Image 1 (cartoon, rainbow, N blue to C red):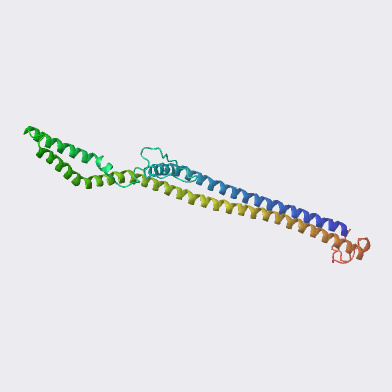
Image 2: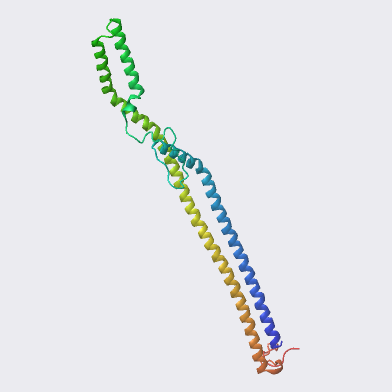
Length: 257
């Protein structure tokens, strides 16, 4: 076999080897890419499902917060997604202290005062003393005493009614806040997972490019080395003579055939 043919065979083998290496590297990279894509899709699907499950609680929390802020006379600032109408009749209903107007509007006080006055008037009328000074004084004393006795009761009823309206809203708003925190954590985990997937994809691509480059470089180096060796041997042994003839029985001497 001439040196040129041997060099060509060596180069061809290097090219075939490089092609096999590039093919296997690309197949491995494709498998890794498919795995990363599947992982990304699974993470996104899990987040979307969690978002769907949490949405009713988030919406309920926002609705409760809107109502709570209305009763407390607060208006949201910025693009918060909340909607509070300052023209709502109940706007600021519980943002002020208990007042005399609240006391006088208390149904318990009004009922007891009305019933007590009716009793005094009916008693005085039965005795023919409805317009007497003693009756008028009795009515005045009764109304003043009732006012003193019922103020604390009316105040307590006001606070109880206030708590009964605000506490459920605060509880519902808390559930919405918990849902929002859950989604915030889930979004953070998703972002971290997607970032890791993107980094892994970059590493896969870089590795595939590196392997391709290395395979081509090795093939070129092998081919160039074979070419240089063939030229050197042709110069040393013109005509393609082979001082160490692997075709002979002993490894030396003339080749078989």
